[in-house]
View 1: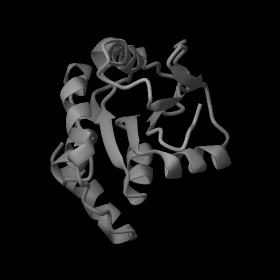
View 2 (view 1 turned 90 degrees about the horizontal axis):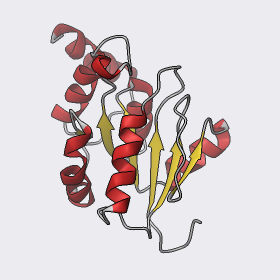
View 3 (view 1 turned 135 degrees about the vertical axis):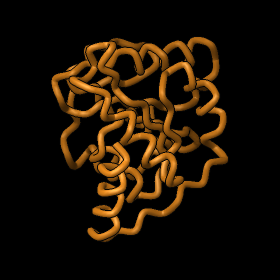
Length: 168
């Protein structure tokens, strides 16, 4: 599927046992509506989320070396609100759209991912959205979004986490 002129979107849903079909349903809807071009390759690490798509390559888990290559090759990363996924993408300077898993849909045990996404978004590292209904607008904006660079040092990460904890 991957071609020279194709853009690649890498969707990361984490590896926990919580499902997140709401995000994949929204992405499929945007493809069906033509809001995401079929020229764009979309690769998904779905974790425990079972999902079939004629337009996206969906894998349960991707071996670490291949995962790292896909992270490097991706033009845009769409991820759940997990710190690990966000930090990994931001360190690579990727354009990131993060969508928090929500307790009300049984996607997580609480809504802590809302605060994680807001923290990184407010600091200009990612485009964070509160709900998949905002996906259409955010996909339109992502091409011109220039993420802030994340300093690759432990002290800066600790400061971000401390800011997050103090504001919860």
